[in-house]
Length: 440
Image (cartoon, rainbow, N blue to C red; front, side):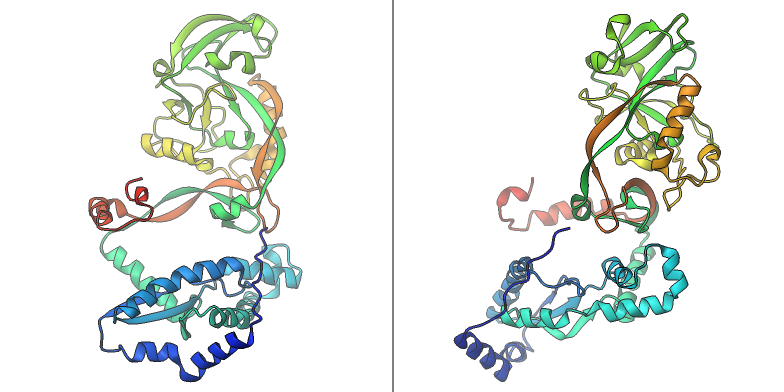
């Protein structure tokens, strides 16, 4: 985890004299009072996290924040500069958990949620003096006496008021979004947080046979590094612009022959012994679209049409077989394909990262622990083509070191696309620096 460097706040005698002058004469307040009847320009600070120490990067950010209010003040406007404190829960909770020696949600419940919340409130403003000292030291003029605080009811009610306005205007709708999710913390992580936790790991590299419907003895050869997502499979993706082949070679049983469909460019990488296979048919990815296959599992009921081949721009010819399995509950690209085609979303994993009861062979098991069991089960049915190890960088939770899952969570959306044309028009009125950002 990145640890911010706390800026030095020692000052020279001259600097102290200047700060004392501003403080004694309340210069900041006077700059506002003398313009109280002028046109208003309102600034609400994007709030820093109150329970973390300020760092040198905050000095830079606040220099930019201070620039615009000062400019408009010099233009004669009354500039309301309202400070704020972000008390968002998880960083506070993690710090308190460490203090109390907690490792699970059950520990919190046994301690008492009310007591735990109170402990978190006490922790929130632990570094408030350092923040106030930094604010004055760098001459960042902002009203901290009347700052808004995100855990207080008046702030929370303002957010509910905004959401109610969106609801009344029919701009809120519910859907699913695949997010990097920590099952231990029970929360998604931002892209910035995810970037802090990558480690090199060796995951299973599994090639699986998916039986093509109405073509006995013919299989799509599909690659995945997450066998635990296979019970949630609803489609396969190919790249419609690439070349694919049907090859014939020895059957899994050792008797007779079988046919496999895969990308021509990946034959040497994907096939166990390419010399044993003969190309019997060449196809474009476009030709495969709509072909159906037999689902590997049927743990959850499905009413709509599914288990067929769709197009995916993300399907590359770098690794695997050129055919990607689609589980909308466990991948952003998968979700896009599923949403575009109206495919089912099979959520086979609960928020704790364990298989739901309907996934009977592995119910209640942490998904990563189930990988070898799923692989063996596929092997027992003659559907496992080969399994290797795949070394790559994988994200872990920077707080608790749990492997992250890409996981579909119920999410509320704002229908901003209704205002797309208006937003584009407004963008043309903004002077962007650098200029290429405007239309880039």
